[in-house]
Structure formats: C-alpha cells, structure tokens
Length: 113
Length: 188
Image 1 (tube, rainbow over the protein chains, first blue to last red):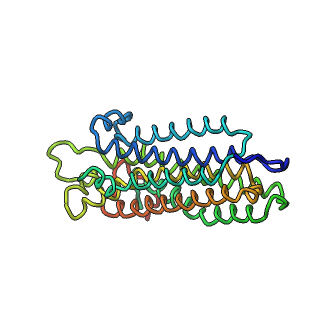
Image 2 (image 1 turned 60 degrees about the vertical axis):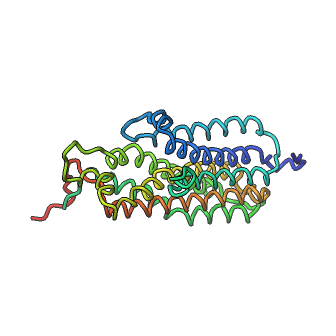
Image 3 (image 1 turned 180 degrees about the vertical axis):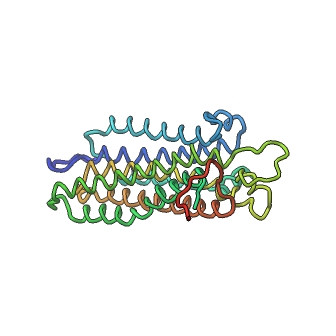
C-alpha cells in the first residue's frame, strides 16, 4: 500500500474497488454460467423466472456478487491508496476467466462433452 | 408497410440500444483518453465535464437497457416451447434452429454465447462511468487506473460486437416474430 502526500490527488482506493469488483462480477458470471450448464440441480436453482430460464438466476447472482464486492471494497478502500497493478492483474484475470467460461466450446471442453 | 410487435421490440433492442451503444464507443475512448492525457491541470469547462459524464452514463444505461430487454422480453419469445405436434416452427426460433443440423450451431454456440457475454458490457461500462465521474482529469495521475478503464471499455466493445453480430445472424436465420401487426405506412 502506498501513501500519498499530494492533497490534490484523490486516493485510488474507490477506483480500485470499482475495477476489482467489475472483474469479480465478470468472473462470477462465467462460473455461474458453467455451473448451470453442468448441473441440472444448479440450473433449476438459477431458474428464478421461468420464461428466461436459468439465464435469469445466473445473471442476477453475478450482479449481486458484483455489487456486494463493490460495496465491501469501497468501504474498505474509501480513503486509501492500494497497489493498482495487483488489482488490475486480479481484475483482468477474473474477466478473462469469465469470458472463457461463457464461451460454449470452452464450457463443453471443461465438461468433457 | 407493417411490422409485428415482436419485430419492433427486437429492432429497438438491437438497433435502438445495441447499435447506438456501439456507435458511441469511439467517443467514449476519445473522452477517456483526452481527459487522461490532458492531466489534472487541464481546465475543462463545467458544461463540457457534464456532457462527458452524461455521455458515459448514457452508454451504461444503453447497455443495461439492451441486456434487460434482451433477457426479459425477447429471450422468452425466442425460447418458447411449441405445443406437441407443431410442424410450423416459425414462431419458435430456438426450436426452428435446433430442428436442423445445418442451423443448430446458431443456437448452441451463437445464442448460448450471446446470452451470457452481453452482460459483461453493462458491468464494465457502469464501472467506467463511475471511475470517470469520480476522477475525471485526475485519471492522468493514475496511469494504471486509466489503463484498466480503457481495457474494460475494449472488452465491453468486444462483448457487444459478439452479442450484436450473433444477434443479427440469429435474426436472419430464425427471427423472433409474432404479436399484433403495427401499420407503419399505408399506401393508397
């Protein structure tokens, strides 16, 4: 964690919280999509609005994870400077995981289909 | 000249929200980059700052409208299950695509990817709008934050391009049709 002494400069914590939580929500979207595709029980649990099927639950759960992560990290980092390189690496790693897990051929590969 | 209600909503989803969002992308990249390289000392007129904020908030709002209309209005029409014995599947796009091995891939890969990947965009653009509003020209002092914002914007562009591209093809092979007809123009 780096301290800053420039009174004009805003701490990077709130921005880092937004970035990391966006990555977390994206990763969660991929994990939930894969779980729903792989397990009929999970698919049934995610079907909270039948006309849209499990998509309704998968996306709602990912949004909840994203917003809860954002709220928590914002409170934690509101007036702090954090290591943004590490935050970016973690956020983009989760974003890439999310992107891969929502790509149907990759989903099928993981499930041995 | 008529259009069905479902066609109209699909056009609003794809062209009204999705395509308008795509058109706004180059502007978003320009706004973020120009603000960041201008630096914290860059004096931006208040009205310009408000316009930049409105621009990015509008993009995030368009992204949310696109995914919500897609998932909760159009997708149920797309995945509707036909009654047993139905031979004309034109009102059941998912079943129509799956009825032939030549078109099944448009659902198995196209729709199944589109329905999920589109959701990365509103999440990313909400974050981008928040960071821009919070930091504005100070993004120049936070190089890594600016890079993350531009990276997420690029991923949002990719996600929208995939969703929009497959949406256009799906609408070509198995359009969502039905509902009452709306007369747009009457020729006498």
